[in-house]
Length: 427
Length: 190
Ligand code: SF4
Ligand code: SF4
Image (cartoon, rainbow over all chains, first blue to last red; front, side, top):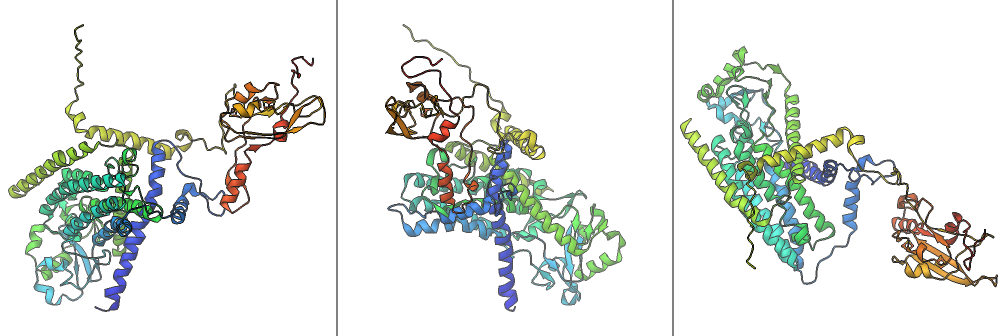
């Protein structure tokens, strides 16, 4: 462990993933939402801002800069009687959870610097140049970076072994931002908004957690990257066993619950323009307001990232493994056989048997690029769907939201859990 | 009188409607159709008119902005009686009266400004005028302008200047002016 490993690489990863990806897409979404809603309603949307020349408009792209500048130049207003410290703290607490969640989002599998990375039962294993002490170890240890120095988690900020719990922990923090904002503003609209936000977010967290428990039982790990690796296995020999294939109900439950968590329409009770002005951030202006709304859009990106990671196969591109495309399970060793193998035996089996060659061979760097591209595409697609959803569905009434959360989503997720448990028990 | 009872049949909603899900998917289908329609064929599917670059044709009975009528000798017909500025509900006519050299003309408007942006085009000024000095039948409206049209990079100042262009002064209003068939005192000139 030297300076580069400990400080420089994590900082670089944070910079690229959190600021270069999450924040960037989040701020682009502010414009994307207006454009998308415009197209849905057959309008053109914002397209007047220009840079340097009047005809250099790029269909409104510069509204991003214009909005940012406007927010910077506005007066930062704190209402009379507000708690200044908490008033300042709230927007930070609103944005922070959405950003730190990206610590555990894997953009790619472990990068393999070893001799070869090949799939066994749908999972890539990276064999070191010199097997050394690993030779007689069980195969599973190959995917553990503690034993295999050739595994580098370059594409994930922090490889936490209980990553899923981390997701719950951090989403649980998100409620503080809106609750404190509502309390600190000394305004009745804000207080009502804050109360609604806390009630709603706490209610939906329950079904959010329970709907993920099924995933947890099937894949049997809390490590997010390992969860994604598990999703590469082929069901019935041809179907990638993504979360949405094994847990279709949980996918919808989780998506609904997390959209409710993000407090956007149709679950925008805490902000309810028509009733509460702007809910918990009524009394915010300038950059503090911008931070709140940016936090909301980063939450959209984070929901998209979590949903793609847990249900849409994360960085997995269908049938793509470290050495190329394998379209059937027949071209890799099966899971049952693999479990009994030691590392050495597995390696010799792979190299000796030409049946295990990929259907379309690809160089490793191309696989890495395809996988990162695949993940980003999934995230963008989920963002798009969330925006589309927001502009399609009319708002719920507050009691309907509570009804949906406690009386529909919660029983359904418990039922889903029970059925999953039964199936696992019987199969 | 005995109270009347009306029994209303409650509309039965089936299971699938109640679950809300098929309706959401249908709705998503509709919005997605609009979205991709607008992207694929903007010219057909987007209904926005990019005013001022594009303009809609105006209807045949469109009347347009004001004009001030002129006398035979080309002077302004208005006698600065303030009827129009008094009746104007938008309070957008500003008149400063002055004494006329010609003793047969009592007063004339030294300044006569209509703020075309505040005008609500109600036509009351035309109705109020006792001597047919103001009309609204030019068929054109206040020309569009945007702050960026000024060469000024100071946005606020540019905007103020742009705003000033909506203040239509006497001479401008007279440019479209014409002789009136009516003369002072109710006789006809021809
Ligand atoms: S049309 Fe109506 S609003 Fe406009 S100047 Fe005349 S009286 Fe005023
Ligand atoms: S335009 Fe007509 S109503 Fe208005 S001040 Fe002149 S004469 Fe009077």
